[in-house]
Length: 466
Image: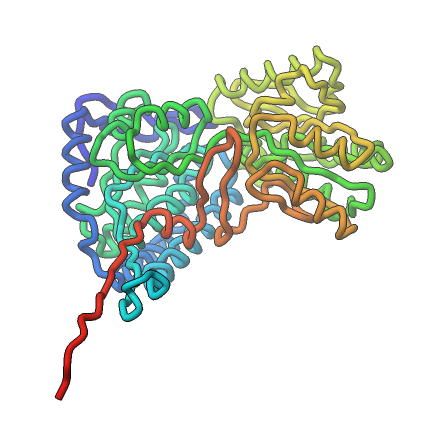
């Protein structure tokens, strides 16, 4: 359900700057009304109907493919290839969530171990937690929205969704697909507007029982501070490392790095920002990566062959430019790219990453990769962990003992062996540690977290039968 307000939110084409939409921004009373309506809808849809709706919505999105891709490119500045990949992921997320709706179950509890309950039975039911507030980012405005609302609906919750104000149109299309698929409108409410007003009112509301948020660590801290006893899932910032051990297959690894560091203009939480390379292969790896990145076509995302479009806005590109210049000031060497025109930045490779540089500790969210060198496993681990973030890491190596060592020692929510930090199959648990957040996405895991275990005890009362 869309709420009309007095303020208007413009949506711009991220490459041309043209205004492509204008949306209503609700006031506090309208946010309250959406939450009240959602509260009444919790646990009102049978499991089978939840699955049917999710699958129908997937079919509708697939039928609307051309429109979805066109709209996505306009609001994000990403390429049609990026849009198509994200749409296909969204269809899978909806299907996986439909499956979870049909197999949501509790467990038997062995209460017979407790004195006096030798003949009792105990089991748990999974019941919806309540109203779910979903606040989503601009960089995955379709799949991340699906990761939040599809498991919530599969679990029997009702959802109030606030998509990123920079890129809300894909979320609108997904909501339309769910409603046309038969979802009663009280189960899903759509609110547009800034996080400082609409989002803040939403997360402070006492009737919101679960908050799922993807965005900056600073905003995540604020949500934790003001959300009371609501359960929170927070997917926050990152400064992801990918490591090349001395036996890494560079023919396999470097094209993946050249993709994972620059797709969506580097605006991916798990984007390869730091590439740590063993000293024995460092020169070859750096030269080959630089050549690959120098050949990446960038510019108009609609132009055939373009792989890197603009950042979400000029402000984001200016920030990335400052981080790059700061690293160069500390001693990094800029080998290619880094020039900026408005929101567009040429894909960049830097050699060396001094510990004092902001790029070593902050999230760039830009098309740049800094290559640093290590000489031992201990040094690689120290450099990889030398950040307040811990979302995912990638490791390329052939030695199984080394792979196991990295999986034990890297302080991240996920370690991708022989793939980059940006590897993210949608069925797997996905989440970070340290300042990268708490909780995990992935339909199976999200559905469990968006439900409560209700214990049911059946106590046997002895009777005499003739």
